[in-house]
Image (cartoon, rainbow, N blue to C red; front, side, top):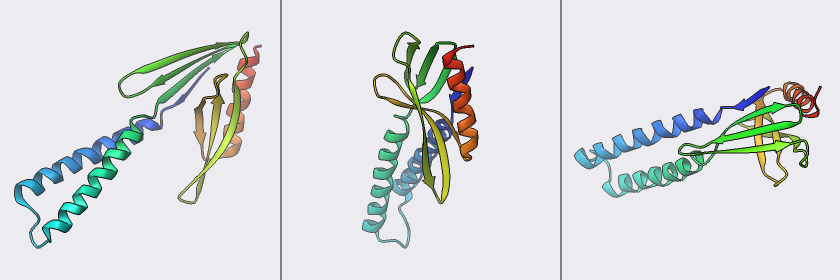
Length: 149
C-alpha cells in the first residue's frame, strides 16, 4: 500500500511563480522606475519582498515530498526534495515506527495529519486531510499493513 503526501508540490509551484513574478517586477523597476512613488519607499518595499521571498523559498524548497510504501512487516520511506532524494527502509525486526495524528489550524480550518515517527525520532507526514475520521481510517490501514496479514 502506498501513502503519498504530494501537497508540498503546490507550495513549490507557488514559490517558483512568486519568485518569477518578483524577478519580473524587479527588472521593470530597475528599467523604468516607479513613477509618482518615493524611490526610497519603493526600494524598501522591494527589499522586503525579496527578503520574505528568499526566506520563504528556502523554507519551501527544503520540505520533502514523501512517499511511504508499507507492506507486511516493512516500510520504505522515500523523501524527494527539489534537488535530491533519500530512501529509508524499516523492517519488523527493528523497532517499529509509531504513528501520531496531529492537528494544525490554518485560517480557522483544521487540518489533520498522520505522522510517521521513525526510530531515529524524525516525524514524516504520511497523509493530510480536513476530516479526523479520514486520517484515523488511514492510520488503521497503515497499522494493519505493518502488523501483517
